[in-house]
Image (cartoon, rainbow, N blue to C red):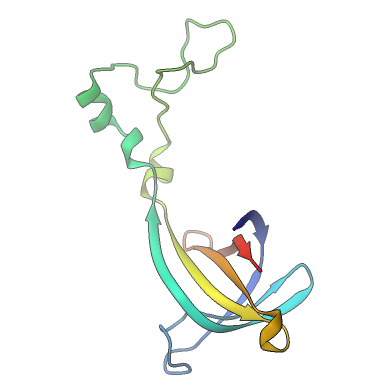
Amino acid sequence: MRRYDDPVEVRRCAPGESDGPELGPEQFLWRGRLWKVRAVLARWVETGSWWHGDDVRAVLGTDRPHDQPHDRPHGGAEAGDIVVAPARDLLRERELWRVRAGRGGLESDGVFELSYDGSDGSWQLVGCED
């Protein structure tokens, strides 16, 4: 699967409008082309990087609270450093939808992974297999 990070516009199914999961993607506009979702193949939710939190640092025995080491001239992290994500990133969830979609006949179908970030309402195309 090729990886992307492209914004897309998505039209979601209204509750009761389709046989699939409610509010799933029905159509999406990517690079000026409209794709119709023919089937939802999978749906899952990913959470933020909780493993970079304070509790994990405590278990690992590191007391450096931030990702900015002050004693390094270049100011960056080195191998073995624990990089701590901001709390807003730790709590962030995004929905991922793997769909089969096409623009015309079935021969033009592809499998796409769409990501929905509920914190700002944005959609991204994150993968494509055609």
